[in-house]
Image 1 (tube, rainbow, N blue to C red):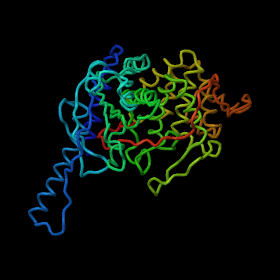
Image 2: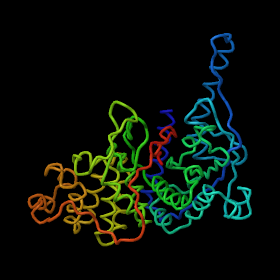
Image 3: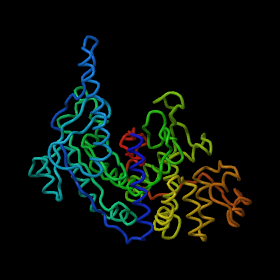
Image 4: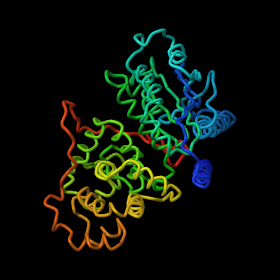
Length: 429
């Protein structure tokens, strides 16, 4: 498993290096879409019984080992590089003793997608299937086209997983986790199961923007428990610094593509959660941002996304500047937000004071002067800002103002399962 992960790391690094070294022209968003539906759930490993003969135990053990290798290959290689068409096996993450037979079809148009779904009209689809159709359409949007300009993967595989008929959790308890949306950095999986409700199509569109943003990123998250002991995270969770940066980048792209998403993520930053360091899945909830330490806020993906968003909104041509600083630091695979901020300031010295103000406000003025300078870098302007820190700011806790609308903002946080076992260090949903 680790060897496969390192191989994929190397492949991504080579891709990034080649892209940076050749200064390639902006890529167009190119996707290979595959629609797949579940045909059956099958048992692949049988439990070893006490009264089994030695030969039977040996055969079962060998079969289990063989299936483990097949699982790694299917998740790490097949899905990323050669999904193929026809009947395929999709291995369960939640239960290593089962797998799914899926029927996979490559689609290049809406008509082909509808045909693969077995319908003639969009009106015949359930909400989850409509979400998959919306994902296909969103791939041709301006938001995706803008992201693609800084891409380095020529073609991203997108698996549209239709779980219709297998959504009953009492019968199929592992389907939700096994087909959870994620990005491996080279391929994206989207599942009807997660969006089978009215309005799910809009959420699915935002998820595609989020997952595609991961395909633009070569940052290595922390190698040990980047999202905590449970391997999952919430959108307002306090995680590892590099993991928080990775998620903030994806959430930022959602924010600039959708005002509703921007509002939701800004609201989410007001109340955080943090997982226990000793008990997997045990959380401290509803931590007010005002009660957090500077270190906690610097590990909050919601706050880092807010920082990127404010840089975009409060500097001239902010989006272009954010994208340039992001691509300029891509070869630094161990970067975090501090790495990015320093590069942003170096590339845009005229914005230094504005950047300092944004950083200070996003982290609620909780950083010490030393922490602050370590975060933004030391130059005459940043040092001068520290000397006058707080004197010229009436409200250090000010949030960026967004024009009001009738859109309702939810403060609830949805659990996000991270497919760390995909074999790719950038894998996430």
